[in-house]
Amino acid sequence: MFVATNRLFVPEDRAEEFEAHFRENMRTYLPGVPGLRRSTLLRPTRPDQPYVSVNEFDTEEDFKAWVRSDSFREAHKRNAGIARHVTGNAVETFQPTEDLVLAS
Image 1 (cartoon, rainbow, N blue to C red):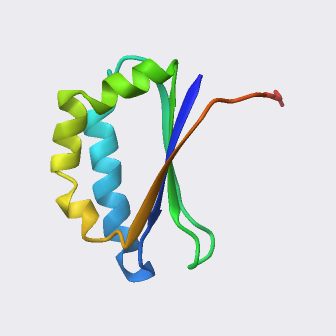
Image 2: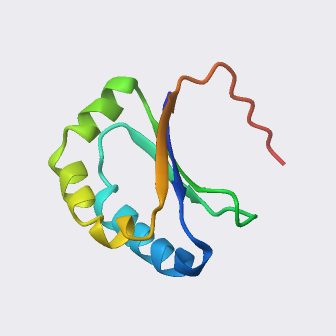
């Protein structure tokens, strides 16, 4: 598995509109992306925290292929509606070393 995150700093007064734009982009452009297992947008619990977008891919190559894809370009072209809400962001990538799943 390969994980890519993006920390997105959004002023509190723009949060609702940001979430609506981001959710629409996720639902429009992410289904069917090869190797994408899961995509999650995490809402901050404090005003000084960023939103965090978490994308889980089968491999790093799947992530890189998505970044080069028409779907990625189209989604980010439409991000003008989202970008005006974001005051800063940071993309980070990870390779999990442990994944403990506990069933209830």
